[in-house]
Structure formats: structure tokens, C-alpha cells
Image (cartoon, rainbow, N blue to C red; front, side, top):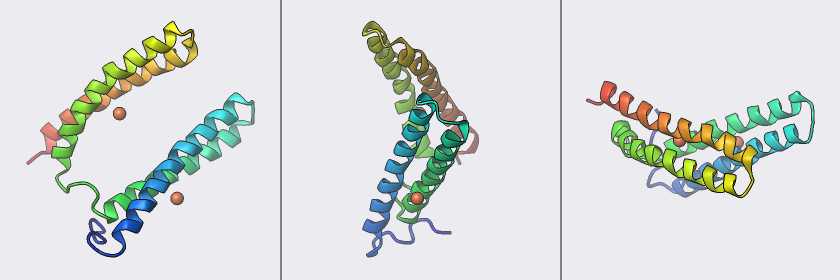
Length: 134
Ligand SMILES: [Fe+2]
Ligand SMILES: [Fe+2]
């Protein structure tokens, strides 16, 4: 058990900084993966960046857990986030629509998929909370 073991100690701030740096790494490595694909590099390059991004995501979650960044009540948080994810579906849809009217059809096509994924995150969180909440 590592949850919250650095909360309130001298390490808490370091954990928070590390979590944020790792999360930024997730964003950057996924962007590099995408850019490498667009620039025509072999699949191996994209795959390697994706693998690194996934590892950074695990690291970010680790430090956030260590510092007890989120309340231990998983399902309360899940229900709060379900609402945000459901709203996110509409927000991303509107964003895609705006980009489409600016002529950015390729991005808009993909974002319409993302919008549905956000909605799915919402319903998944609700279903899990209903199943596991005590
Ligand atoms: Fe890392
Ligand atoms: Fe989401």
C-alpha cells in the first residue's frame, strides 16, 4: 500500500511536481508519436514513443497515489467525473464542429470519435459506481 504515504510529509510537494512532470511527458510522447507518424517515420518510432507515453502515464498515477492527491472514495470521484465526461462529449462535439467550419475536416473527423469516447467514459464510470459502490 502506497496510498497517501507521503501526504503531509516533506515529500508531498515533490510527488505533486513529479506527477505533473510525468503527465506532461504523457502529452509530449503521444504528440511525438503522432508527429513521427505524420512525418513518415517507420512504425517502430511511433510504437516506441507510445510505449514511453504509457509508462509515463503509469508513473504519473503512481506519484499521485503516493501523495494521496485524490480522495480515497473512488466511486464518489467516479460519479463526479461521469458528469464531466458526459458534458465533455458535447463540448468536444461542438469543438469539432467549429474546426470543421474552419475547414479542418481531418481533425474534426477524429474528434467526433473522441466525443463519443468521452460519453462512453461517463457511462462506464456510472455503471462501475453502481456496481461497486458500497
Ligand atoms: Fe517517467
Ligand atoms: Fe474522458
